[in-house]
Image: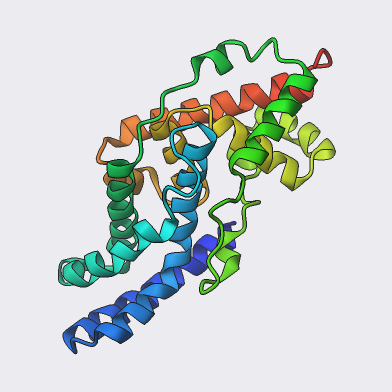
Length: 252
C-alpha cells in the first residue's frame, strides 16, 4: 500500500503542474483528461463510503453512484485551481470537496454500541454470520470504473500493521498473520469498521488507505489534529479488541 500512496503523490505532482498550465490556456478538455489520472484514488474512497452506507442500512443500493460525486470535482478543481498553490493542496482539496458532497447526501451513521458492548460474547458462528451478511450486502458493489486504473481499486489494502502498531502488539499480529490470509484480514477489518460511526471510520480509512497525515485529515474533516488522533486511536483499539476476541481467544 505504501508504494501505491507514493505513486499517487508522484502522479499528483505531475498532474498539478499540467492542470495549472491547461487552466492558463483555458484548455478545458485537456484539463479534464489530466485530472482524470488522479481520480481513481478518490473514486475508491467514495466507493467505500457508499458501500458502508449500504451495509448499515443508511442507503439503498442503486440510489447513488460514485460518479455522482466525482464528476462534480471537474468543475470544482477547474474553478479553484488558481487558489491551489501546491500538489499537496490539490490532494487535500479533492478529498475535502468530495467529503462535503458525501456528507450533504448521506445520513450520519451512529456508533453501533450493541455490537461493541457484546463483543466478548460473540461465538465463532456469530462472527462468521456477520461477515457473510456484510459481504452479501455491500462488499464491492461500487468498485467498478472501466476508464480508471484498477490498481487504485485494490480492496486488500488493510493489514494487521494498521491495527497492531507497538512492539508488544506486533507479537499478537504475528500469531494472527500465521493463520489469516490478506482477504480474511480485509473482510474482518471492513466488518468492524462498518460498526463504527462515520467520523471514526473515515479518519481510519484516510490515514491507512490514502496515506494522509493527521494534520491533512484534520483539514479535510474540518476538525482538530487532537480529535483526529483520538478517533484514530479509538478505531485501532476497537479493531485490536475484535481481532483478539474473534481469533485469539480459544473460547471463540
